[in-house]
Image 1 (tube, rainbow, N blue to C red):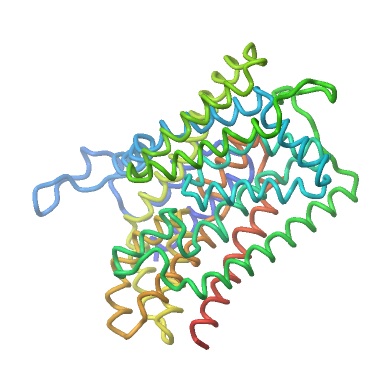
Image 2 (cartoon, one colour; image 1 turned 120 degrees about the horizontal axis):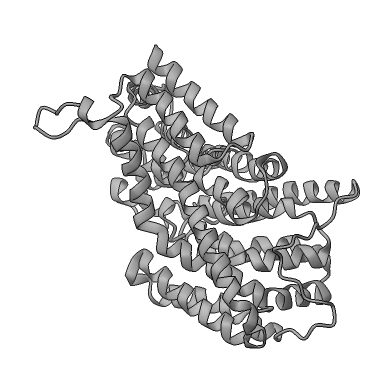
Length: 441
């Protein structure tokens, strides 16, 4: 019983500290410590002893840092280049040029849609959702400035465009759509007919929700609030042409698609190309580019360590007996195997704060069980993928913390409402719709 209290209490504590603005580098280890104490996990390696096979038994300190360090070593270079690319797009004037073109030719009402669309294109093109926010931030700030929209909705626009109707849809090259393949023997296009319907429904509902939230804020008198760190260009400033300014984003997507055989390392080639193109396009602003590189490097360190802190918590949480009991309980749910699989992945993704983590932990255990009950592999693939993108984006999620605080410089209090509406509510409803459609057809 104490293990359950510790696991649920630690998760609640982590969410509370995150929302209250306590640094995640403090909140993550504190919450993981609570899990370790209540689960009876040794705190330090000398206290852990050995396993039956002679290997070291798990302990709090080693397990937390293993999760932290694994993510850091896997993604630091991508975070670094992604952050620099975003800063250079802003400092070069390329982001401002594209934003000014969109708002002048199409009207300011398209600023929100353009931000979401940019994220959606990059995400469905395969660029990691963590990197997309960095890449589009300069453009988003310029768009919101031109349209005089409250910048606290930028994280919501990023999250909606990245981690909902694109990340988990059929054909998406994101890892959240690829993990089920190895356990279910499916392809990335599994359940594509239902996926199209669900993706369109999620896109429409999510856009209506966030657009209404932005409209209410504007009617209440909110507008864009400039910051000292923003790249500013006067109305009559000479900017690169819009056609040239969009080339860096096109270059990132194009090079990534060409070099996909390199896996996640293709991001380095793509982002490096984008940085070179952005520097070339904004050569007239070359005096500001060195500062952009420095800001990008600093931002990358803050962003990735924030994410690592949450990954470390998830690693320790998995060691709690309550975690295994929760997984066993959802497997025992009566009814359709698809419902059981959706609940299992949703619960685990919520506990770990990770869609991919929820799938990787749950699928090896639940896939054989539900397939033996007659579940269709393609249907399970699609339901699991969509479900994993719902409760994973609670306030402690690494992507949410990074995007709101490190990339956009907002607080959970001001920005998380839009994120929750578009990345928790919308995917939950999308999962229900997928279950209904698979049941009926």
